[in-house]
Image 1: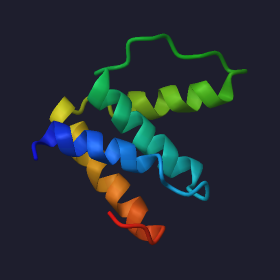
Image 2 (image 1 turned 90 degrees about the horizontal axis):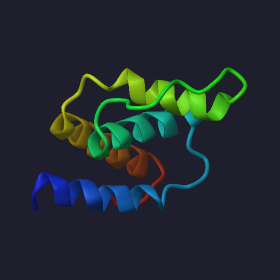
Image 3 (image 1 turned 180 degrees about the vertical axis):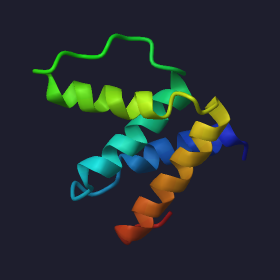
Image 4 (image 1 turned 90 degrees about the vertical axis):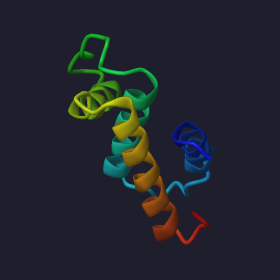
Length: 90
């Protein structure tokens, strides 16, 4: 399989992660996913009273220098790691 197919497979597998994942891990995979699918941040940073969306925006902004391929690779590696930690097949 190619990188894009692997990425799509792990994007589907990420939905099976147990709800016990840390917010930090979830934000990492969110940022990598957005960078891989959308590219660099293209919206204004949410206001300070919108903490959840602000944290997501910050996670995406933190990886905006990565290329699409690098973001896909890092996403796959992180989701594999989380699946293994949860005792699920990677």
